[in-house]
Length: 399
Image (spheres, rainbow, N blue to C red):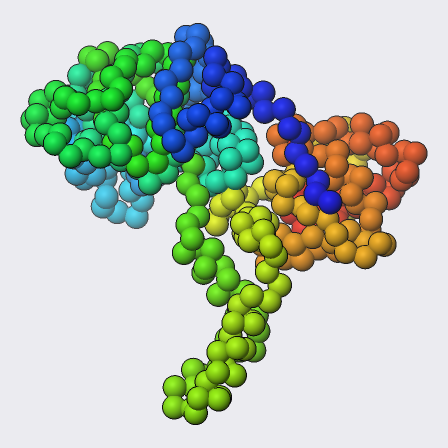
């Protein structure tokens, strides 16, 4: 059986409204764009200008996160970053001067440094099962930052503040002349969507759809949330990596052998490549590799580095540090077994009762877990099982 996450994706329904989740998946997802109007404060809890200022001020030693672009061209980082010396640093005065002159500021992977956006990105990863990243883009003048382009990932635009004009051109720009855009920020004709996003509006852009965004001569900021899936070549690479566990991987290819030996070798390779593969190759690939080749780390310090692994008492909170759908249970009757990436786990069967109650997004008070499991497991046993999960970095301790 599989330990399932909570199925009611209320956060996604709130983002897509008035379009329902079912409508989005059946009509729009990976097929066509969606423009959804919402109340002006719909995304206000995610990020404010005050928080943006704080983030920029605290990451001035991280120039790789900053990008300034104007009319489709990235500005030379040396014009706003001190690159000499031991520590590069962003020069706020020069950044602001560029912005005043029409540049667009983007800040890369802001979900790594802002908790509400980290939780949102994790929700997208767990629901859509793809690697997720959030950038912010801010502009002040009626000049586009990025040129007409398309992305190799699914894109959600969440408009936080100010108006911004978005133009979508579909999966082809044949017959469209972007020259005027480069010269004056006047977008070319032929857009299949031409809308001004206001705060609270959402725009979904499917992979491969050409688009451009233009500020409207006043402060504007939006989030770009991208979802990227592995490709068939990544799945094939995973199959080859599984082959490396066999002794066949380091054998020489018998190029000068006779036909019988080459056929035997070929049969051995085919057998090694397919051994252990399940009928649903996609689900097995996801279970062993996860939604992201570089999974988000979780830390439970200071407790995870102590002999006891858990805080004392009952007031701490627990959440899953992985997507619960990856925890496909099986094995012998007396044990709970599953594989996560290259790691295999074998726990007492009672661990399943714990995993069924935990969620990646909603930390559970330890006291509530102890009380819920009291008819089946005493508190000392629950603590022992939780310590096993902390040691393997499968759960995170908060609070």
